[in-house]
Length: 90
Image (cartoon, rainbow, N blue to C red):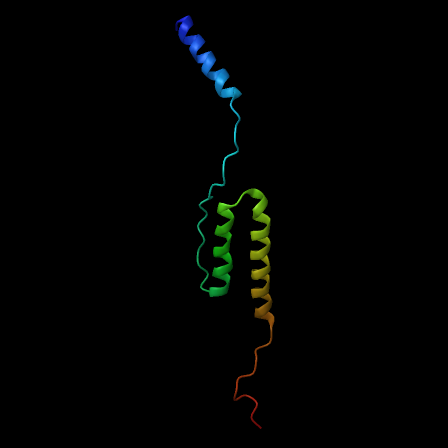
């Protein structure tokens, strides 16, 4: 390698180091979401994709919203069934 080539590389490296480095934008993780067959649960899980387009500081809101929705779906499974229109006959 010639002295001139080494000097050119050193100058390019110094210039690159002097330029401000911007943080990379959000990048989707590409996590596959398998449908559960329960429309309400699937809708909440699909909402997780919204976090792919947000910075890390926006993830908490999405995760909390999804967690709340999934918890409500589980709670609804424990609720007693409502009587049908003809189940109260005397």
